[in-house]
Amino acid sequence: MVPKNGVAAREISGVTWQKASASVGAGNCVEVAGLPDGEVAIRNSRFPGGPALVFTSAELAAFIDGAKGSEFDHLTGRGL
Image (tube, rainbow, N blue to C red; front, side, top):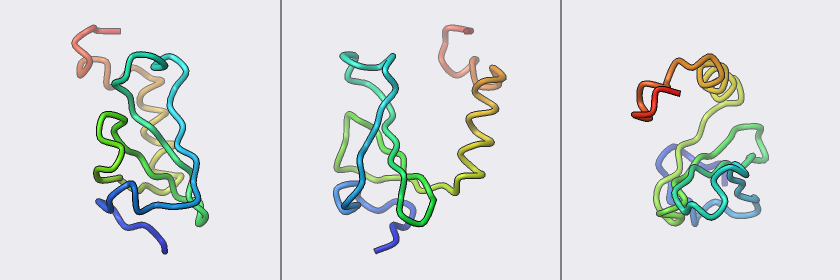
């Protein structure tokens, strides 16, 4: 099965969910899993069976570049 956007994360089998080492122990984190077709699924660790968003590797790369460039810092309330 090729996961579609919004599919329950528990329905995505055969993948390993990974979270950032900075979030270990905090319990509130985003987890990612590489999919067999090269796309990436993302879920909320507080709701591991909830919906997963599925992105192409190019979409995820653009988001990561924006995060590295501090484009989303205003959303954290911390002004990193």
